Image (cartoon, rainbow, N blue to C red; front, top):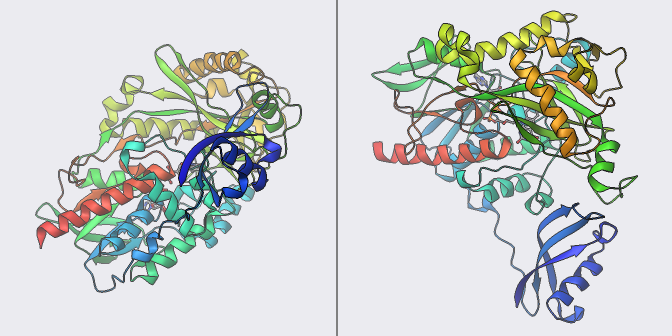
Length: 522
Ligand SMILES: Cc1cc2nc3c(=O)[nH]c(=O)nc-3n(C[C@H](O)[C@H](O)[C@H](O)COP(=O)(O)OP(=O)(O)OC[C@H]3O[C@@H](n4cnc5c(N)ncnc54)[C@H](O)[C@@H]3O)c2cc1C
């Protein structure tokens, strides 16, 4: 017999397998000794009542053996002699596309402008400690893409876009904890992600694919409306039967290249704002209603949203127990984002807090720059904030209440942002339509979540790379660019993903589309 049931478990019992088994047995009206195995299917925390508890969905096996699914990698075969497909970008979209190409019997040749995941670390240290931003190796560029040194949240609402479970299982087969298959809000953490990313590369290579670093795509090889290959680092040509373009939302040079080549790109709505950081203990006490967090509960998170003057204001990419990091991709700009370690054990909770930016907000930019309007607007905010500062990656900051009151803070609380912060009139540095809405929005958040609106919270600028301000359009059925045969825009940079898992799933979908295309052309 296999029966699925839901049980409530107190945090102090969550690691006690016997107690969980007894609860599950009781729910199935079985004697505990009659239960052979209890398999966890789903785990979430319910903190709505007086005290938080875990909700577990489990499968109870009695007189029947649990049969785990075969590994996806067991079905892989060598593709060393297969048709070649270029995959530009080794982020989640590019790497998951490469894995899927192998499954489809095609040979991926992955090209990335950055460095292998471990070497990337040195460049991240240079940004953190000396404010030096390497234009090809930073928090967005390099092996694993923007997803590597991140919070590693794997939650997505894009359920219709692909097979989430397959993406998660592949991560587990490359070293992630199997908890991610069960947790309602799975996450990996920046200390574990690099090893997983390196393992994915090892799989690609073991099955005959190739991965090359320091290979920036600088031009496309086009003939009669078809892409035949790319130029790498302005000198080397590389040909293939199809090209997957998965360069992420920060590859501005790729958008310029597309424009130069008269390949259609479109402006796309995005969001822009700030990071707001609170003491984690404060968020825990609000969310869990406990003075001190139970040791069996994770650092708590929040998700807040409201409307201000017909525009969404919302928290984004919340990192419990995390750090605010400098995520610029070129010198002369200031961009912040958030990451965390697997234990999420820093003393801080941060989240992007952003305002939706629509076309009508930037008509001055779109009139001048067309499809590049949003991108130029984004760039101008990042540069304005940088130029106000000290010429390095120290970030302007304001206590939350001071930000709302339009006052420069006389002192700032300790923050997790390693390059450091300085007091500045952030409310004036941001475009008026953004800062005014943020000022109203955070007060509403304070009413939704008591304790949120406090002088102990600090606002850090700017959170500008929430998603791509540009879309590279593609056909809905073929996933191919309408203007260029064999060119497959993919992932967040193309405007078809907004996070690690949705980018990974887009990579898988695009790889299958490439297989269909190549099948139809043989
Ligand atoms: C600090 C930080 C934290 C984040 N935290 C989370 C999180 O917790 N959860 C989540 O879901 N999302 C998070 N994100 C967002 C997530 O990382 C992205 O949505 C995701 O990585 C997009 O995947 P992608 O493969 O489409 O693009 P990217 O990950 O951006 O990868 C693009 C790749 O293309 C390469 N490239 C660019 N131009 C070229 C070129 N010309 N030639 C060759 N290669 C090129 C880059 O080096 C890069 O490796 C975070 C992002 C950042 C920056």
